[in-house]
Structure formats: structure tokens, C-alpha cells
Length: 254
Image 1 (cartoon, one colour):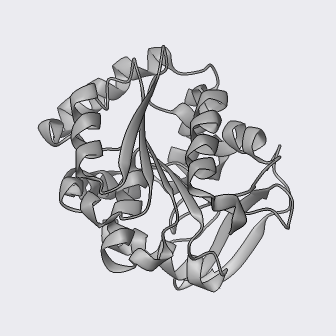
Image 2 (tube, one colour; image 1 turned 60 degrees about the vertical axis):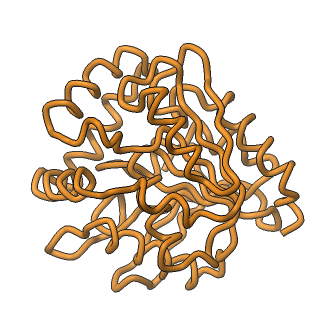
């Protein structure tokens, strides 16, 4: 929990959901949704840059980080339902959401069944490119992308992967690869920005454009020289883009 404030635990989604929190108690909430196998921990660099204006809350979905999950790994709908339950239990409906990679898929699915819970949305490196929904293509892209990520990220991710375990990792990857996120993006009717690092091999520019075009109130932004995990490897730039979205939507008045 280094770099975060006091941890938050909430009885919801059939478990005790953990969230890391940073920022003033009276500031507007900004909820971070992690990607495949990850936890709140890799949102630390972004949270430190946003915590002066927002109360940044990075939730651990069931089975990941410090939140226990069911014996059977949750699919995308199970994860988004858990996120929705937690948002209702904590009174964070309508908060701004920042998703990274597979976290974007969870947010898009949440928009299908609980659109009222969404505030403005930041989709950072949204997966999965529909032209590469296979294990070899995805893992090949991940390996290439790691050369553009910040030093220390690999160690952090390996720790999170070991914590959730290989069985949950494999099952979750299978669910994510089978998820047609492009059919759900149109349900995100709040203002949204799709952000990509210019060197991101997991999310090509063509896929970013396609995702943006499907959003009713969407636009895109690209961070030069950055890879896929922008919240860790390019936090200052992602924070700037996030603040720009929230400034234009007046979300700080929430």
C-alpha cells in the first residue's frame, strides 16, 4: 500500500472488496478499474498526479489484488456486475471512471446493464483488438510492448499475477478474448476519451479509431513514445488528458 492512503474495505459483490484511496475526502471521486491479472497497485503513479484534485479510488475486482474472489473465476459480466455492486454500496454511482486495458472491457459491459452508474469515462489502451483475439497474437504483442514500459512494472505485474494464480489468469484471459467489446461501446453515453500510447503494440491506432467512432460522445488522444500501461509508464500525460475530459464535462461539480 506504499504511496496510498488508508485502505477501504466494503461488503459487496458477495465478498469484501478492497480499494486503495488517495486524495481529499471531500474531493470528487475518480474510480480506477484495473486490467487483466492486475490490482490497484499499478495505478499508484497516476493516483499521485490526480490526488490533488480528486479522491482517486482504485478498486480490486473479485479474485485480484486484496479482494478474495469465488472459486470459479468471473467472466466479464461477473466482473462488471461486481463493479456495479461495489459502486452502489459505496455511493459512487456517476463517478468518473478510468479503465486500463481489460478494465475498459469491464466498464463497457457495466454500461450495458447499469448505464446510470457511469460518469465520464477514460478508456486507456482498450482491449481486445477484434483482429487479434487469439493467445499467440495477444501474448506476442504484450512481449513487444514491454520494451516501452517503465522500469519496475514487470516486477509489480508478476507479483499480482502470482497472487491471483495461474488458473484465474487463464480463465480470465479466455473470457476477455471472447468478449465482443465493440458491440458494447455504444452503451457508454457519457463523455469519453480513448487514450493510446503511440508505441502500444497491443492496441493499434486503427483499433483506437474504431473504438472512438462507436462512442456516442467519444474522442481520442495519443501519448507520443508511450506503450500500453499509461497509468504506470506515462502517468503525467494520462493525468493531463483525464483532467481535460473532466474539466470540459464539469465533473468536479459532482
